[in-house]
Image (cartoon, rainbow, N blue to C red):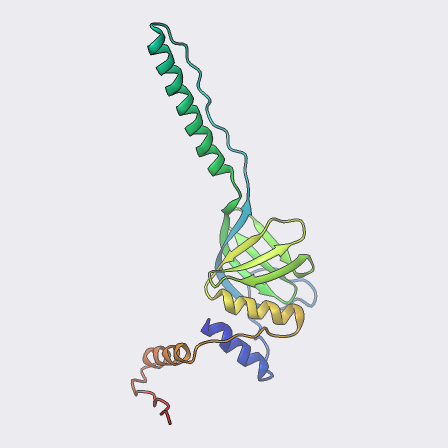
Length: 196
């Protein structure tokens, strides 16, 4: 959240994203701006098979009724497990290195390469855990990456030429600054605003 706010302020001050070198081929006029690790998830339903069991029972009528009832319960339980597993849900698809350019998001995954071209992007937002994308011809796609809010602001700026409104509680900004100061060896306490 703090990273997205800071990037918003950076861009609004007239500065843009800084180009970075990336280990991938870029097209004519394409510039890379960020690299991160990421996981790709898609919200899909799937077909799940389950074993339907049949049984033959011989013996007394009470035994046969009990055996058939137990078999029906086992089949119903297996069908319900398969229905839950097949229902639409977020499913892991790949993980690897995510690249942001002025034309696309690209994932060099462990299973395949995926390009998410801005022209196919219909909507983008963040749930503070992932960058949520809705692309033409694809199921809803989530990119789990560090600081998804930063990626959301960067994408918004690259695609629309503006930055979204980001509000961050003041105490969160102060805590982030204190952590950064401590990491940089500056242990002086920041002055706190006085009331009144």
